[in-house]
Each structure stands twice: as structure tokens, then as C-alpha cells.
Amino acid sequence: MSMTWTSDKESTGPPEFFSTVAPPGEREPWLREMWSYFGENILSLNRAVEWDYVYVEIAADVGRIALYPASSQTADRIEKAGCFVVSRDLQRTYEELERLDEDSFEEELTRETEALAKQILSAASALRGSGISLRADLPVEVWEPDEDEPTATGIV
Image (tube, rainbow, N blue to C red; front, side):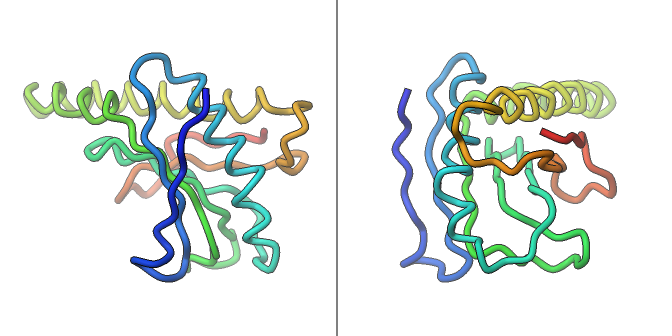
């Protein structure tokens, strides 16, 4: 699988974000490719940045999963570049859940994002030893917008 990545540099300025659209169906292949792209392209664009973990944001309402380097020393965004994948499947799932009553919506959305967060961490761990230049013992935090706590954390 090879997704086509595009830059938003000319339209938005720094930080530069690279994006792609995930193919429909199974998530694991494109999640691995997302991490591969991050390791092969995004990390080198952030060499001058003092970061100590990868921030992953799941915005299910728009089907977006974003990755960028972050620092536990500041709440400010520090990255020079990041990447995101738009998944129409994720967005459709969110739209289907919106039809539920509020309590069921929250419960099902939590279950969906927790499962996706585990898949995201698993995909990063699966790249270990593949030649992709993710740092050893790389801390990752998976967040949803406007939450006070990460949905999942891990060392990959």
C-alpha cells in the first residue's frame, strides 16, 4: 500500500503538515504506513525541535488522526512539521454514532476511540526492527480534542 501525501506549506505556513486519505477497510495497513511516513519524513523535519513524545490526536468527527512531536516541558505546540490521515470510515462511524441518544453516543464513541488508540500504538510497535527510524522507547500519547487526559499512552 502506498498512500499519496501532500503538504499544506504554501497554504498555511509553519508548522508544515503532510496529509493523506486512508483507503477504506482494514486500518492496520494504513496505520503502519502513517507511522512509517512519520519516521521517514516528519522526524527529520523536526531535528531542531526539543521534543520528548509523539502527540497523536483522534478527531473522529472529521475522521482525522494527526501525529507530531511534542514536549512535556511546555503546553505550547513546538513542531516544525507533522502529518495526518483522514479516514472516511472513521468519520462515517462517528456520524452513525451521532444518531444514538447522548449516553449511548458517548459510550460507543469512547469504545471506538479506545480501540483505535490501541491500534495506533500497536501499529507503531509493529515497525520496531523494520528499519524505520522511530526512536527507541518512544513515548506516545493519544488524545481526543478537548479532553483533559489522554485516551491511551504507550512506549513503542
